[in-house]
Length: 418
Image (tube, rainbow, N blue to C red):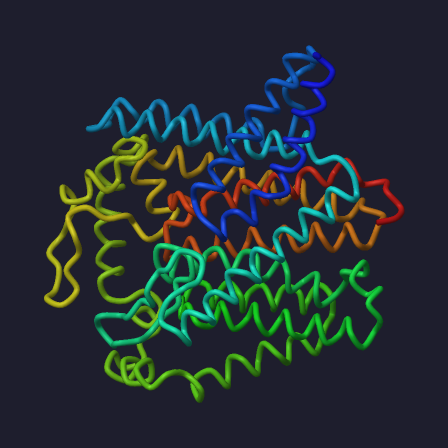
């Protein structure tokens, strides 16, 4: 009986890890279910087998420092319950990447995870395209989003709004693009012509879905990611594609965008962030100035925001309860500069470790998957310059999932074939 339970838990954890990225595209219930299912089966299996729970990783110390500083910040919290919920959320994120590092099994497991990511991105992109044509998405029945300022129609697919969809797609589209462009040899068995047609079709679908969000940080993330691929892979065609996109977009952009850009006199800061977000950033900096060490308390930024609002010009006033629309301002506001430095320390350790794994990796296919995972993380962080992507419950799991994926590949450094 014990062996059967262990076997069930083992298989449940295996498939939960595969299904998490795809489930994010469908509904928050499913992604939350598979994350919870992963945790329960992982711990039950470990208890029954009387094994150690976690292996060590390169980011354990900075992540622990970030969690401890976040807990200390609660002394300034005006909402203890909200802060405690924030601590539990951090624990969930930590468990996600730690379990991933330990539970990634073999090459077949890697391939299935890769396909789950690509399929999820394709489904969300097709849904976005469908929504632009019909006015509603086929997953959750969401109506198309219409910008109240300029009347621009934007796709949301099954996500709360276009920007959240942009965070999801930019992270997984750039991951998928790297593999579709440079590898996925296990699909090439279809034959060269069929494979190339399938690959091109998938790339067009993915890029179209992302385009219809009209999310500026997602577009920036895509551009930077394409540039990284072009430089590292020495791919002149990809760099030419990037230049073509940059120069052609102003010509083919919707009229409402062109009109709005002219009205704001093509000012780069306004084009990227809007005037109201510039005010949010000013107010966020004011919050940080008043609480520079440990912040106002974990998970209480929006509850404290109104206390630090500076005078705002008409037409760009901000709500009294709002997120920072920047991961780093939000983090520094809630956990102070100490919390922000701990997170940056974690990122430094993460990318340093990933670079070491990349250099040591023997297999070209696995090396590419690692590169794509790192570029996906970079895309997510770029989104976080004008969005609080790490604080959106629907998509925050993506960062920690891909973080765990990149570090878990270390165990395959000496693998020769994929």
